[in-house]
Length: 337
Image (cartoon, rainbow, N blue to C red):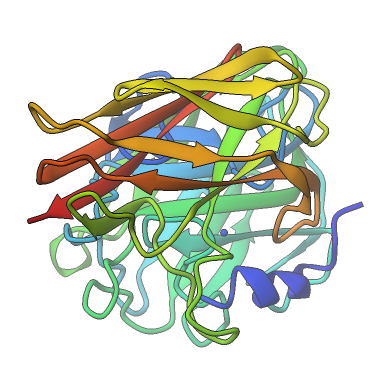
């Protein structure tokens, strides 16, 4: 059973998820308009599986790089997300994640990395249903780039929705008053509903904190010195094909271009490092993964903590992790001189 959604305020509200370009590259089918992709949320194993509860992230057509501003949702304006009738919908509670009693249809507006949305409380935006298949987010105050990157994603946590029983691709309509002066923009997100759970590696930011009450840092885009490591370790949640935690997995680097994710002597995934021309000495180390509890819904997961070290050249380093038979994601480090 899903936890009472007030508990989300303790993890999501402290400051939810891969993503079009950036951490959540999950081989998503082609979307269009203002939507770049729709993918499984990073806190569960089965959010995109046939017959499972719907738990998805909608990525807008904006880079997740925090230096690039996201969208603005002015006060009084809304984002409407409409699912096709093939998603079964039953009546449950609905409201902002911090105040909604489970079972609940809710969601959070994200700024480009997991567990770091605009605070999901009524002072910022409301969450309502319009009919049986449309979720509506309405800004109570301007949600705009400034101290934060702005709106880049929606995490939809839908206790009242069940994914279609038939695997395949399905279109989700997004109508957002996020254009100039609140003008209407639209997009179609295409999500793949899989016949069964796939292994997945999922970024988390809940361990990237300067203090217990500090907002969660962005582990996906970081900076370092040449030959150094970024401020935050890279932490990931690992789910196996059975939906349970992957425990005991570790990284084994082969050379400067990458290595393997290994469990009990078997390769279960790989990672590759794209480095500046001529760079040497770059690498990622970490593991073994340990038992953990993923945030928000409290699902058992494996926690893999890794450390990136930049090579001997300044520039951008992009590391791509890929699970065999599962998803992929990217992590970014800009190394300065």
